[in-house]
Image (cartoon, rainbow, N blue to C red; front, side, top):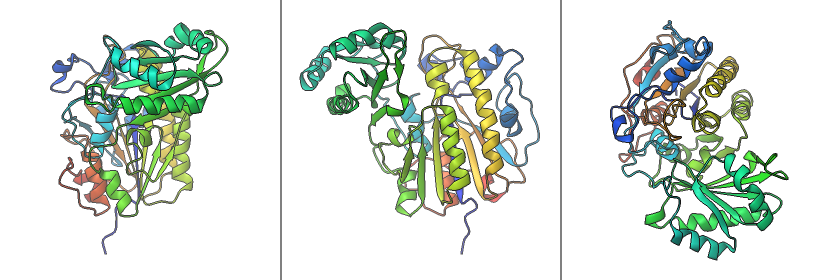
Length: 402
């Protein structure tokens, strides 16, 4: 009988932590972008990330503060994105084998069409205010008091394919906000308005000086992947697909066996470490740590981003210490978001692959991978499961043959 090399595989998506422009970056306006390198240039003394450096981060780019070291228990590589896009869903779906050829619609420049807003107002019974691209915190300062006074809906978007609705948790109520988002999701199934996600953004507070988003009550209504993914194959064969953070929402629950919401990167790592210490499962733990992207990338704050990376590095060390010999952890990203770049959009970048197990002996730098989907293909290969023909990806054989 064949024995699986790894019983548990932890895939940690450090959201937006790119490591250099894709070959087609110029088509997206991103030629020259490099999230990790440009952050390291802004940090006094460079990035202090000894854990990731010990796993081979220094192999991937000229990141100030890192160095090339021997790392026999870790393989390092960069991965390219095949899919057409640079958004959350495209990146995560590709990791699990989906090739997205048509990018999701965005409404960054002019907001949503009047016809969409009119239908949303008619069906929800609430006036819509905002309707533009905006920071989720700044729009509360601008419009939160008006929304709270009139029980309207703040509708806004971003560089991502997303329609977000903010409403006060006490004035409007969570259930009413969720109901309005369900209506928005239905409206946005029309081809001409089809966004990747509709997000409920509840907030609390008395005035613009103390409004605060309630991250734990955020609710994403995403499109379901167009076909079964690696996660569905695992689920169908009785393996655990434990999701931490917004993963469950990104896949609309498709192929998910367990999900845990998070309020921060720290909370996400708390839950991941708890899974490693207390949950004896076979399968994967798929994690998204969103604050790199939401708090620092989009807000063009390289110092905050760098400090967030350094904090994650310490938590990654904690996770590694509790891993079992037959565990594998893969640290990667879903796109870039260079905080030194123009605008507030994601950047079209390659992503890191840092792959660690206490059972590895020949870890080294590997050639660049052709697709994010090599992660999912490797997972299936590890569990001796056939990859459906419609899915992308080639297994990283070094991880399984070491």
